[in-house]
Image (cartoon, rainbow, N blue to C red):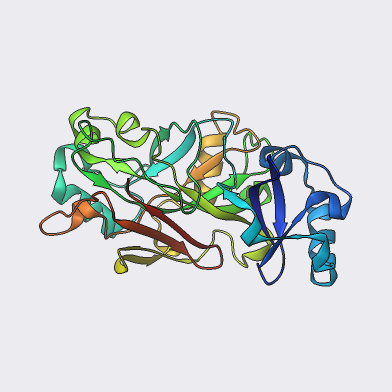
Length: 296
């Protein structure tokens, strides 16, 4: 099942995509009411989800709204906390990052690299990535699988981590490489306004057969393939991450963890090729879909 946030008739609300993905149904069609996607994540039980999934193929299309009539938003427009991020989490990306700046990116891969990403409001599919001229000289893309938690997680055994996952979406971890490397930390260079494209939907966890997920992932810039890998290639996988972090902190319901990017980012090219105004960046992940944003 795919969930979206959309604006219609002056209201921003969460909804459920039809099976053919041409219409969206408000939760009221299924006798439920949620103010926003954060409420859905915390309030939609597995039983509710499964009941909706059973009814969805037979639901009268007239009860929904054509996607052409709504304005798609990021699935979680305003996350309740900063995103938790993994750095250098694919071996091939580690090699290209270290080549670009060994001072900033060298790692022995013995422990996961965690950092956070501020997002005041996530950027929707089709909305622009801000280029911040005068501040950002080296603008880069990173296609990443985002894992969304459905309940508070504390001291979670690794083998039970999947029980805490609500679903998955795509995040483009847009990065200002010159800011990131000059400050010797990643928070500022990852957190500028417009640096968190997210979407186009949330794919509920029951739609992915394995946990940790094994999904094809990639990115195209102006139609040219730049990244292509599979999430099974991650060094530190979501089950380990949830177990490790929850040993020392409570991961609240709605926590979004973005799990790193594979090789093929702009700084990894020879010579490096960074984004410029007018570029179209398409991040895609198997089963979830594509997230496309122009650079403004």
